[in-house]
Amino acid sequence: MNGQADSLTITLFLASLSLLPLLLITTTSFLKTVIVLLITRNAIGVQQVPPSTAVYAIAMMLTGYIMSPTLHSMADNASAAMNAKSHEAWTDTASRVVDPLRTFMLKHSKEDDREVFLEKAKKLWPPEQAEKATINDFFIVVPSFMISEMQAGFEMGFLVYVPFLVIDLIVSNLLLALGMQMVSPMTISLPLKLFLFVVIEGWGKLLHAILDTYL
Image (cartoon, rainbow, N blue to C red; front, side):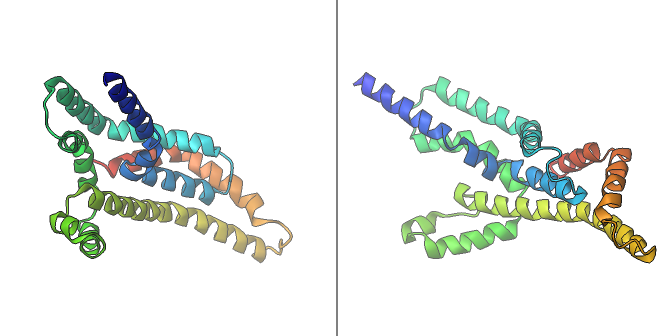
């Protein structure tokens, strides 16, 4: 009997590991970070520099830095639950473990989005489940957090994109005024954008700006 229980535990553990990439994207700062970095790379005009692997690695490392306090709190709650060896329902234990993550998402999601998802839940979910739903439920907070993060990521990306777009327009108009229509504007604007981005230490300032949004 114990062998069957151990096998079931291992199976559930392995199944939960397959959900880690999904949880990384939906419940952490990874989504906004990678959106901003990819938009910045496209704005500069170098499609493969830095390579996508490096962009995702940077986003993951920055996510680990931002989420470190939350992950430590979750680990402490999980350790306390295991040491207590209480007979409470596993749903209550899981709720206590993910509570720091819920707190993080509540802090960085918009209340209006949560209210909209709660209203939709009362129409989509079964009546018994809908009556118990609150604005702080995990399955209400997660989609609200994702929308807030995507919105914030595109807002930051837009602000980053505009200066590079202005440089492209200026270079294009100058070449047109000089009668150099045969010269591709990218030939001039790309090294200029790279030079300016390096001079202002753009990558460092960009990462610091992303960190500031989670203070």
